[in-house]
Amino acid sequence: TLTQRQFAALAAEQAGVEAKASAMPETMRHVLKLFVPILREMDEVIYQFNAPFVANDGAFRAAFGDQVTPIDEALRRTLDWYRARV
Image (cartoon, rainbow, N blue to C red; front, side, top):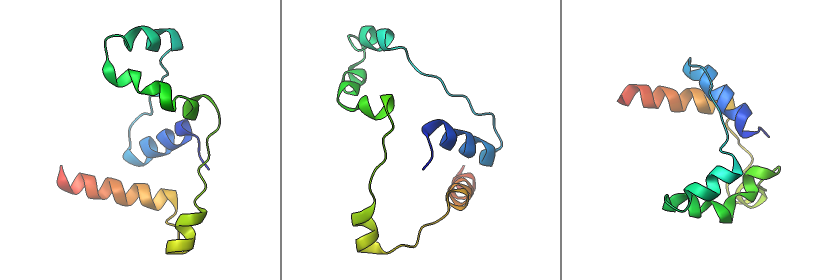
């Protein structure tokens, strides 16, 4: 399991760019949500960003099997697909 920062760093490394990650302070989010409707929706999912959040993939594996593409390969293939279309 990777954190969001770890995933972003890995994706940036694969893409050959510098990883840049930042967080919006809670106070700023509360002020901005008065003017930016999408930020109002964050109240319902913010817990996913404030504490470790690991999803259980048991039902998916039961339905589709245990074959998992390694994250490095998945990122590389996704970036190759994207680059071929840009």
